[in-house]
Length: 501
Image (cartoon, rainbow, N blue to C red):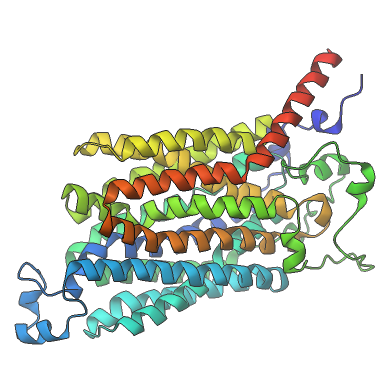
């Protein structure tokens, strides 16, 4: 009995190795570290919140008070009367950043599909580095403290940083097909977690000299990375004479390699021949429109699911060091270093879960199982004792089950969605689709950061974790139609294999 094409697929790892060149490795590393540097600068802000809050509020325990003479000058020029209001403003800055970042993602994805991805990415990195330097370093050196100035700078920073993710995912999608995409993108999507680790490490190393030096170091490294990207990144294989995805001699294998894992394998051949793209006699793919991208199967459901999941993931990203210092009384530098274990768990989780999804040839069931475990791990972490080793272990487990699915949706699944049959032949859908998914996720994350600060202030940290559990459960709910469909496909394929034996 003949099997469907989906059951004759080339083994993912073998297909990956056969198409890998040194150009693929360079592209992997450059895109990986470019986004890592963007995340490192964001992590710096979350890691120095305690120091910033201390600087912005008058206190007899304020370590900066002896340096600012006379004391009356400092007492009359402070931003906030107490640490609680300063903390609320810091949460507001997180929200402002994420809202502007989300709005920028919708635009950056469209711009990235129409301009040179290398130019857009390099410009975003360098200009964002300058804004971070102004925000955290120059204002402190000049002793200039102004809430509206901080807000404006953080709006600009969010817009500039939004150029990063759509561009790097689009470049990776141009170079790597679906052969092993779950594993490759699972490993590659660790760039955000590596950036968090790098940012925490750099901040903890220089924090003793003042929080302004933490911003200075990360901004300098990010600017240098943007220069390297401008001169060294190759955005597609055709720039060095290699065949593009779908143009290999073995066309059937690569055509299958570009088919998304959430697609319905029972679709009619006539449906597969339909393309959302207009016919182009010059064989030059054109970028699809924003609303066309929203209408692609799975885009809306995964976008809504990612809005809930990114809210939880970014809440850990923005508030974990502050929570550890505030709830357990640990030193800020120690809290920064311990928070790294959440990102370590996310790196391992994204890689392993991506590999499992390659083996199963389905993504949604893997996400569902991981998110169910995430609910339990959140409940357990909310009751972690005042012990750094125990806290670190539970934190890593939580990162495994939350950071892993978050990495999969934002990278491998976004690439799958952007290379569906409805847009086959057009790599210019990748940045747009990625911007929609990540932009919607960032809107959810933006709302969440303000809610976290409000819930914590009025109800306490335990209710914050209950809120996280609710959002994680909502993520499962949004992708439930995809879960049901893909489980049915797995059972159907299993029956066909049994009949063929």
